[in-house]
Image (cartoon, rainbow, N blue to C red):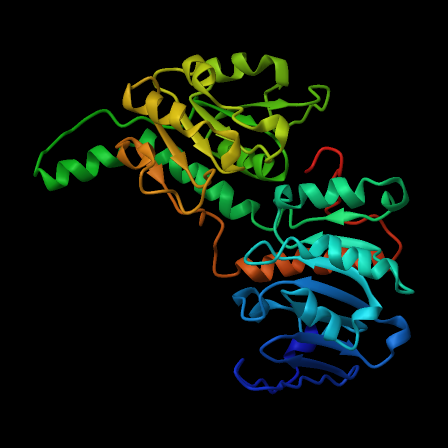
Length: 378
């Protein structure tokens, strides 16, 4: 949080036409209407104007920083509103908010800025996933004349909550919580042997910030950590064994808990299918927190119903909300959450904080904090 937030601020509700915020260090005002919300520093020559693609009534705007000097946010979700904004010609950066943001505006704003003096110098995704941006990345950011434009994302903002979710799922199945709950309902005194996580193996397919944050927690439980990485030469003290992508069968066969943290790319589509679930231990548990597109959901439902694996925990799906006709709803050994494993009380604040860190780095002439590899898509 910024120290300026300690200053007294006057805030009108969203339905009012105008709200003004001022600090003693610099004059900054926030203009909030039903169609826009902009932050402006007095000296326009040094102001970074950001086109934020987001519905103007999005809850994420309540967490938007109010006191960043020399920064202006233009927040709209249609091209006509952007073009009507008197500061649109000054746009030099774009932020895309996947929660309701109109992704088709990315190329339109980028192209419009090409005709303006400043042009786009930075694109940011408020959340970690950039798969929705794939067509724009290919059509614009991968073009030779735009390869210098960095793409950043919200990577790392939600890793701690997702790590907690993974360990919760592991404990849920390890401690047989469903059995415990049923025993209470049936008034059954069932004094079974209670397993522990210590000594068990947790295998990560994808070992970025989320996987590594989870591995640290798993180590505290005394678990063995293995992972699959595209480049197995990237050894890490957080993993006991690093496998290459071609060695995934070894990880699947060894792991008591298989955690998918893969990004959504054409290469990872249906990465986990019938063959992969057949490679797992019958006592194994599959946990998916990356992208829903990497899992063949019908194959997973079949493996669960046949008892091919012991259980699964899913927070992400190919289609969200999960269709009522999906066979996953009928799997009793499935822990299912509505893509809210990272929806914490400070969810939006964390996302904006990562954006601010990138903004500061770029202004200082440094490399962005969460740079996305545009060729890989993550």
